[in-house]
Image (tube, rainbow, N blue to C red; front, side, top):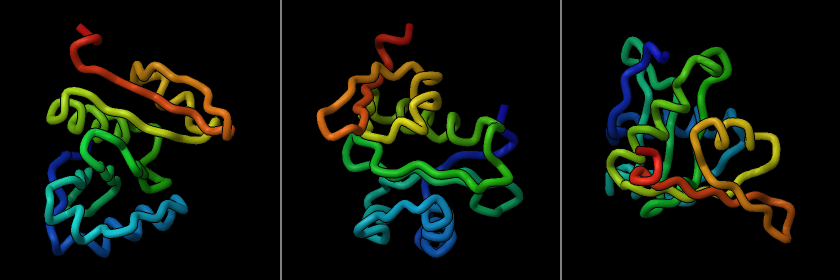
Length: 126
């Protein structure tokens, strides 16, 4: 289980969020706007941002965790928080992260472009 706490990103955390996303080679078009809209969740450990998840409505556009904090439940905690607020999530992703999304219970479909599409409904988990 994660020792990080999850909450909405604050405007003063934008640079820290960007660094987490950049380290995972993920780009978010308007991160500052997403933070203002409350569409960015962060995992904090000792007041340091160690993970981030960005939403566009119910679609996960990015989720990343600092390398040293991976495999400790941080990504799972971020997705769980987003799911509890939205009730349903979708995501498109590469094959390399399929095990992560599958472990969370996403139904996964292959797309023609080689990427994967996943869907997770909170109501289907009960």
